[in-house]
Length: 65
Image 1 (cartoon, rainbow, N blue to C red):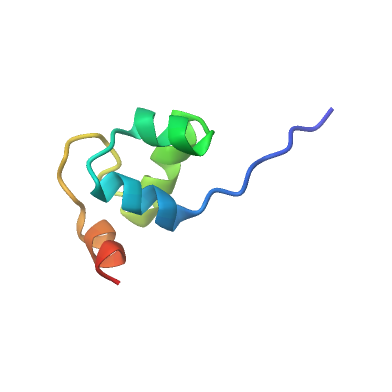
Image 2 (cartoon, rainbow, N blue to C red):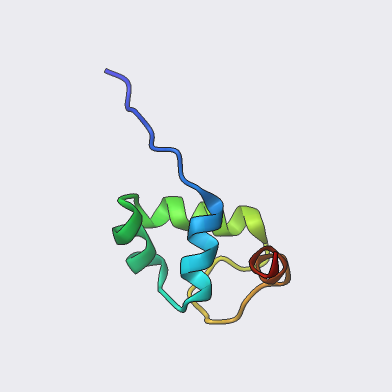
């Protein structure tokens, strides 16, 4: 049986990350895995998708709009 995947809104992930939430907390709030959150953030800026607290340049630009 095939899995059904939830559509994950990247802007929701970005806004929660901007609020200082960890990838784990973002995943819990959105009902997805930590891996899904990681991949969305990595897509936004391949240089950094970790919980380091630093806002990558592409992520910063997405949050400013």
